[in-house]
Amino acid sequence: MSVHPQFAEELALYALGCLEGDDRTALEKHLEECASCRRELEQSRGDAALLALSASGPRPPARAQTRLMAAIAKEPRLQNAEVGSRSPRPQWWAAFGWAAAVATIVVAAVVWQQNTKLKSNLAALEGLSEQQRVELQRARHIVDILTAQDAKRVDVIPVGLKAPPPEGKAIYSRQNSGLIFVASNLLPLPAQKAYELWIIPTQGAPIPAGVFKPDGHGGAMVINPPIPTGVEAKAFAITIEPEQGSTTPTMPIVMVGAGE
Amino acid sequence: MAQVYARYSSVVYAVALRVLGDTAAAEDVLQEIFMQLWRTPGSFDSGRGNLAPWLAVITRNRAVDVLRKRRPQTEISESIVSVEPDLADETDRGRAMEKVRAVLKEMPAAQRSSLELAYFEGYSHSEISEKTGEPLGTVKTRIRSGLMLLRKAVEAQ
Image (cartoon, rainbow over all chains, first blue to last red; front, side, top):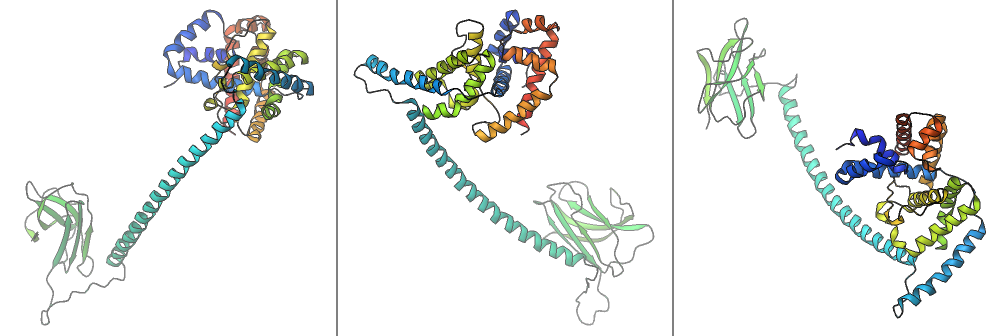
């Protein structure tokens, strides 16, 4: 909420105590129903206090203090007489001191409590953060190995088998909407063609899940392609498509695998 | 009370003297303010600010009443003064006041004069307009923007 602009100047004048006449009446009426202007007035009074505090001058003469203390010395006797049998009125600064002491204890207790809670929260957050850091480091390490330039991809196949067949592994998590696909021994592609991975959902049309080309050893990888969330997959398939990919698979399907 | 007086009497006396320009009258206001504080200690609400700005404002109000020879216009318990940042610490207050004085010094003379006429001499906005020959709207704008400059100076510290 902001101050009503038509009253902005009047609020400043009012805070300084120099607004008079109809303007003052109109503003006072408005202040009764406008909280934001009341807040601004309070702030303007603070500004006026700055102006007041800017006044500087000599210290009051010593006689002023003597006069004040003499007047104060007379007052308690008068007040005790007025209150009759009641206990003497406590000295106000003593009351102020006690109130300040109590307030300090309360504030200290609250601050201590908050501090303890914050420390506990901080410790929990630090623990969580450390755990996440370790997990992230492990995940990064796995990705680094899988994608390293010098990574050797070796297929371990039964002795006597001359060439291993093309093979792919899709790891899919519906809950995390994540898909990792790793293939090996893929056959070389015709010019301007690429492999495309498809999610075959339990319902509906196949969903494209990334276009890829095998490297010189027939290896390829698709990590977390953009896919819709919450898809229930029943199988994964690979087709050969134009390099830019397709929205529907072009037959034939060259590789396919169903989930467990 | 002796401690409170030692700490704040300079503020009260400086404001009273600034408004009244007369040491005897300023001493009277000083006496009146501290006696009122003595009689009604609950009139100061520490939850709404600290003592120095509050004393400065009620002193100014009382001194202007004296200047204009009128009965007190405001009960001191009705005076709410909230200054941000809090100026309870004397060092902070001293630093803030240096800034405020610097801003006042750099302010165009006409603007400073409008503020001072309003606050320290108790003139109404229409009286300031008559006295300076400036349009009423100009006086209002000058006063508001002058106050804003003070606010910014202290907020920036």
